[in-house]
Length: 154
Length: 419
Ligand SMILES: Cc1ncc(COP(=O)(O)O)c(C=O)c1O
Image 1 (tube, rainbow over the protein chains, first blue to last red):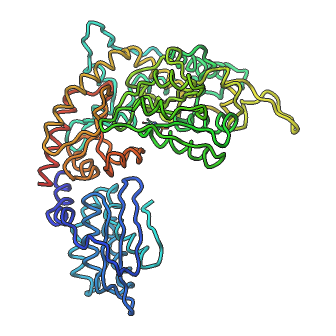
Image 2: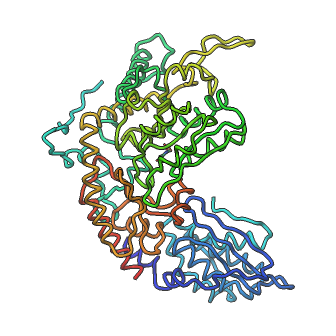
Image 3: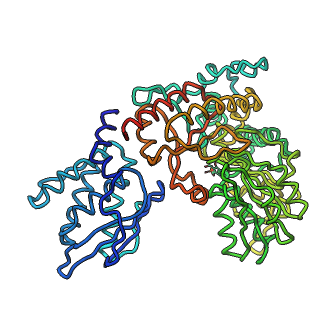
């Protein structure tokens, strides 16, 4: 169990949790959505700026939550920049499976680096109650780019 | 009924035999992730002693039938058990009569019953209900629903930084518009013991009635409803070492009998025709449908169990744990206790540096320690103290200093990980 804890709370996650990247409110965001994990009280707002070709020019977030949810939001906002919305959808799908401990199958070459990075969050699969923490930011991003105002993990 | 062997624990010569008590609770003897089980979440729900489980087992196996219906032996036995449980609750709370005891699903259902039945009968637009800033959502939301339905106003008594209920501010909120004061006996987050007797006195001077949410209070302090003289007192069985699925609403009998039914169905009627139905008096009026029969038996067994140990002894034990834990936790660098009221029950909410309580909860679980993490169904209170969530350790009659030592060690482990 303590190995699982060390695996979950590894250096990278603690670093992103403590010093989140893209923690700001960009004035020129084209979409934003609120994410809410009602059981934990975690709340995030995700901002995205989508360019003409449906690609994400900027992504950022604000809010508060546990180390896992903040680290996940921090990593996500780095990773999605420059990607097209459909790519982000595909990545979310795979990441979600990873967190649930499901088979992710063949990973397309274009996502390999990203998924390698996100792998550090897959430690949550040992902690079913924490999966929502790792996926909250992604649910919220998903809501934002698909024009919904809010996402809830419930 | 089976005779359960109970070790004499109410030794008044002050030796509180926590070892013997712990032996009654199978869950406490579990190993969790390779560590002894340090269960510090009794405030959310308490573990159950064998005595309760055995009584319920007996009731299901050999004494089970629906109540208030059949003319046969088991039905009579089950009805007697159920009504005896009501009598046991009445005695425990010092109610005037068992008729004042209404069995509900939990304290939430009890408060909703009052909001619907009493609220819609006696309150009208412009009337005011006073609650406090430290209420559980169960004592906020039902009143908001009532407000939205009939247009009453809700006023909130503030708490100070330490978590004390501000009596002077309460007094100022009271007016001829105040119809009901609904406050908690003990805060589930801060541990504050609210001076509810003063609350009742002041409210009554202004002609307002009083409902006390006793979910935590009855467990840590006990209650004498005649001495308190409130109008309603509600609690929940599962926090009192009894089963889930049962709660209690106590109300003054004449008041209960003026209230209309809350839910309709079997058991609560006197006579039904398609034109007109007449209702029975309390408590039957408020117990539509098949009640929590075996849960009532379990609750009575739990009441027996705590009465055997003695509520005063339990309170003293919890106070000694509080006195042990408060400095031990405060000594951890970065730990802040939220809730330092003058008069506190065995509940300690805290934050640790800027580490989120869910991370704390997950990590200390790996060391066998169970605490509650989150907003504790008291979001307005979290906002009041400017925190999103806290971790909360709460003590039960079986808690010991080893649990607290284990918590302190585990919190140091959290700090190590986050260092
Ligand atoms: C003060 C207080 N009120 C109400 C409740 C709700 O109890 P229940 O969920 O059993 O209705 C709780 C328990 O969580 C509580 O601590």
